[in-house]
Length: 203
Image (cartoon, rainbow, N blue to C red; front, side, top):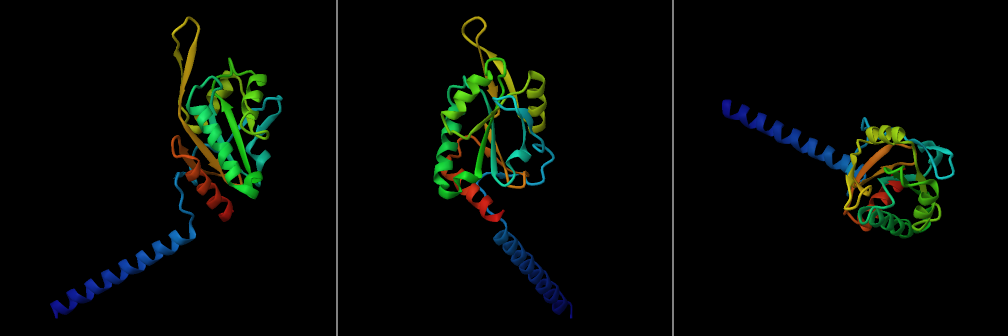
């Protein structure tokens, strides 16, 4: 009797595990599989409100219906920033007909040197419809806090010169304006393209 009971309990446990596994597989089949980190429902990166290079205040609502990629950087950045922006240009092209459904937003962490004119020239080098945002130092600090972005000046080799250390990653928002993905630097244009295709297909 005890042996039969043990086998019965074991069978129920295995069956329950199989059902749970099946549910997991079904859930996984419905949910997109991303290369980047899924931050759906995160308590950060929910608001973005800064002037663009023309002085117009922009928010995520301005691009509703598009997938938005937000990247924080500065125009004097020698490597991470131009590499990321060039990859985003590649991604837009790789999306083909869906390229028009992607909006790239560059937020400067160096408003002191990145004037509106400098920013506009910089972003249009990578895409004619790429948008640059620039706030006051106080606004920049507030947005960086909202997105949990680290940044700080690093003194250069000559008096008065400096660079800016910062978090090297992009944030991806779905067409409804919700934060969905955190894309680390170095993942590459192919991986990001796949993520954006999956996000567009599921929206």
